Length: 497
Image (tube, rainbow, N blue to C red; front, side, top):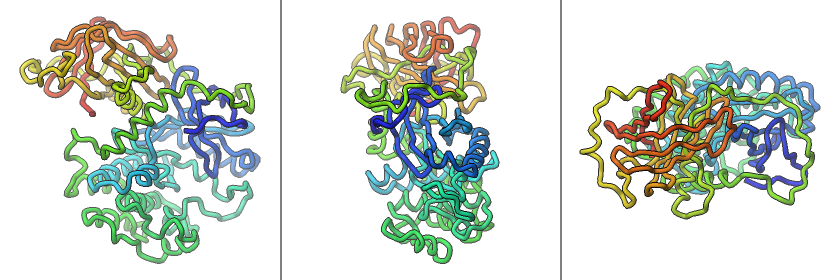
């Protein structure tokens, strides 16, 4: 993330900008935080495009459609102002590197990782297509990596650029997409179907597994690459044999012969190194997990725009902001540590990766899975306590969802410590709220006793402290029970790392 520049605004809508994440053909992308504490990515459209009525009409239409996309494999559209002088759109921020950055910096991914990537991207496409949207620009830079799997961004928004080049000039019939990751029908300017995204997914998988594009290299001229996409077979010589059938099916020239996302999920998870196996193991290589940690620390430290930057405007533009009703907020959980103790660096990473682990992550709203029927046998099966006293089986990253929701996800990280020290750090995020909490250790148990949860960040009307609580290991899951739960059932958490 780069600091804000002299010509960057300080505010967009109700979002305070923290830094610049990147820039593309449509505009600049900023890291920002709402007045309620939610971290988002805000895309500000280029001024020259904003004056194109055709672009603005498409942008308005695509943002409206993108708001309908749900599911845990995408970054949700949270807010937008398509009528502003310079239109913008805000999405949930995913705290992780892009696939392009990961492969460029660390090399091709292992076959097992690519299979899990394929299944996650297919699920994302299923959600996008269910909303009546074709992504049109699925490429490595639009795939972000988190501890829980990949996330797809910029779905549908690319269509707003149809007929407009990056200078803002309208061109009838021009195609949208990135040359190395387009489908044959895109290249030919033919009507598109959801199968277009499946072809692009195949090219993305080749890149992930080999570090190379299937129809050329970075030095291949765009028109030559597009000709190869339309007329020639892909270069799959470096692709692992176990991925060959999956990728070949995606890269069929005829859209009707490509598998649907549901079939892709089944194929990816049925391979020799199936995505469903080793569920307790991280899906990413260790070097990328460490990189996620660096992303986490960077976000945790992004409190204010860099001093010295001269804002383009000190006035907050008007726009529609996403607000959180007070009834949705969770009671307290852990905070991302701001002290720079080396021993806490990975913890901070984990907490932040929580934020990137999906559209919504964090800690428990008092409600959800009822663990009361499970047998309490952890006392005899827990591993010996690590230095500090908390049993080792309790330590790590734990996650659950609230009720039947797929977006109200609760995560916390439990680290070793002594009574009186902060050992639980949690983030609770949903479509309309973002709260962070912390809790200290009272006794190591087992079961482990925690002190009252305190709010670290988030508005007091939606993020409320919690009472003392108990952590109890039950058949490999961790149950958290609050002393004062207001009649709501405890939550059962599954271990994520």
